[in-house]
Length: 409
Image (cartoon, rainbow, N blue to C red; front, side, top):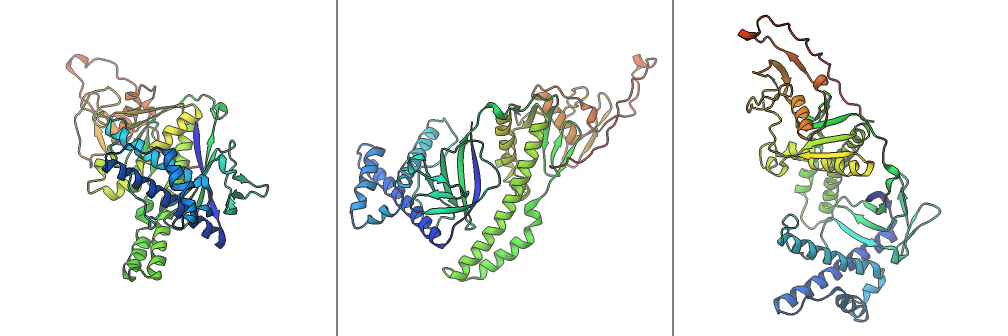
């Protein structure tokens, strides 16, 4: 299994200049190759191969006055830019064949793009020095903020500059079976929502942090300051970076929350089941901001790859499963209910059900997991006895367990 680890870089002024040259050269080669292929397509010529483009746009172009500055950066960076274009075309053609979600044709890159990136493979002979710095060809030794140890020797490294002006080193490493966790007994169903970020089938509820809502005041102030600046001025560029950094802090906090919660749930449970939510559809409603603030898709993706990494079971049930309409006690479908109804009574068995916990239990059952509803907020209600059962012995009431918040370690 391949994993990606990102670490913050702190280049000095000269290294920032060298990285800017690498970003620019990789972008120019990408655009030149895209232009060559689009020209060949419009003229009805054969599709140019990567080898021919490499010889023409890199090797021969370095000897021309217009592209002589391509020799100032590592040739591996330029070759990887052509590989990126190949991947873009391959994804586009696969989308046309229905092998992947629909996507557009490759487009030209702009020097004004907020995100820039270059990639170094083993052929570039990059290395990590004894002092813990990242040594890149024609750039130098970059200071790295190591937050953890890499599980194995990385095969590639990408240097990324985000919209906030921060630099990151992204490593791709291979992991084996050594990280598989011992088997655990619990199996868990998860119901994602907005009132609570996640409600678990064992009765626990995880509050939604609402990172974007909490930072709205600061974001609005930074955005208003940006709108007052003259377009094209240096002050406007500084204000744009302040806005980007404010958004980056929100995104980082949300990502940290997702990582901590997903890791905890995967470590504690042998199997995890979630519902396949229609996030794109919900993002077109009046709840769009809250839906994007929750970040359900990113959280589910983390659960999926961490389950594969640690040897756990991950199940995604269909979005049309009536988890909120079926009683988790007797299995009778009681019909749809408006969102303001958070507790309802089953008309068949008389159980009083918490809407979210009942849905989480049904998610686990729909996935084929063995779960117990004893932790759910379920209690017997006053149901009139049937005529044929007036003299039967009453059943023991199920125990009600107090809900507790989940601790994020």
